[in-house]
Image (cartoon, rainbow, N blue to C red; front, top):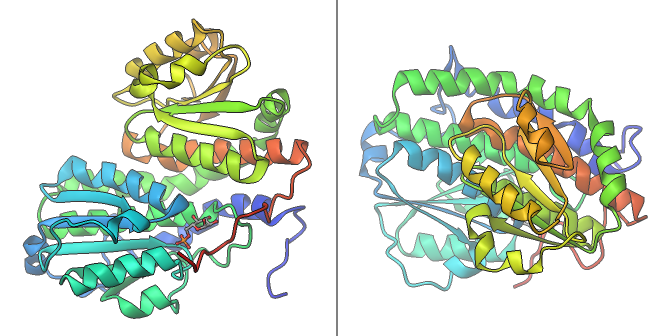
Length: 368
Ligand code: G6P
């Protein structure tokens, strides 16, 4: 085939390793002198951007989690009424959609049937439709007004990794550009975020270089039958993505919860046999999540924390720590997801599972 494993035992591991390059390629020709400029690809004006009242982000699976991360960025700066929905729900709802709506369909393949149907539904109601996709020639891409491509290269592993990285990157650039045209984003915030985004590829690569640390942690937990994943704010969608990766390829039951919601159910299941993965890089919610870690420990569950380098105090709270480099709060998801992908990979490997083609799953789901 045109794409080979390039010396890696699985496509998934190869694709995890490509993520620094994917970040760079997704930003190429879209950032100039520290500012986002998508005018080569989008014919948006300040006026058309200001006419938008509603922003809908619609997707399935991993693409939906990328949209949830972007929502948290955009809402920090904007008056837009933002809604993120699963395509198979959105298409059957009865919600206000009109010519004041920008509907963005996030789909790696551009062929997911529910996402395509959701796009037709929004278009029918008069929304301006946009696709964020890894296939600019796909059905969804051909039907929308605007397309932004991930430039991630073909992804073969069924469990999405590098395209999640590409989706977050392109969603962030799209969001910043939209906010800028709407005059909702200060030049200071834009330049701070862009400068730090340009450094992310190096931080991603330094994390991947330390995969052996994650492999050692994975070997200690691969016999568990249930996992709970927790996170708040920007880390909540990353907890969901971490749980999804683990269940997709290792077939271990993994459930993600907003950390503050744990007391409304999942805490009943906790005991020493249920490891709890807590995504808690340094941000405004760190202390809140730390109190959830203490509630977890009181039930004897082993805690695996994803924390920012230098947060030594975590060592006394968690059985194991996956360290991530320091970055701005809005950009933590780009780093925190990496150890979770690597963790899922090594758990599945230790269990002898079919990593690139898990049972019952398809790369692109073209049926309802
Ligand atoms: C399938 C794949 C997932 C993917 C989802 C959405 O479930 O296994 O990896 O996230 O479809 O696919 P899309 O191509 O629309 O992003």
